[in-house]
Image (cartoon, rainbow, N blue to C red; front, side, top):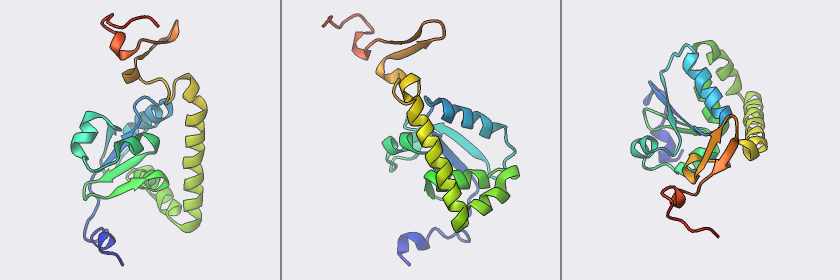
Length: 164
């Protein structure tokens, strides 16, 4: 067994807290975040926007671009879970869903968990054209419920840009 995996055994490094990194500008991700905070937790979950200054300060070794592409969960012992494994460990932290998490951690359950993650990714990709991952506030996009999306390039905010 490689040394990198030996030091991550659950008996020696128990998980007492999990940090869930989520895309704060994804409507599905925000919905799931809101759902998670309402659930009774056996292991405390802290939800932090992926690639935010807070996430970068707490986890400087992570690929923060990748955390925007798929759910990433970090345990207080340094464990990093991505994709289906991240969903399973998040469910494991919830009182009502721990039994389901144990079922999803079996080989056949892992296929179901992976399918759910792929379905969520497909949904995110389908809605990216109308408010998902494409229109980011940091890129100059703003949303008005009455007028829809509008774009002002970041370098034009102070009126310093020139028209094309």
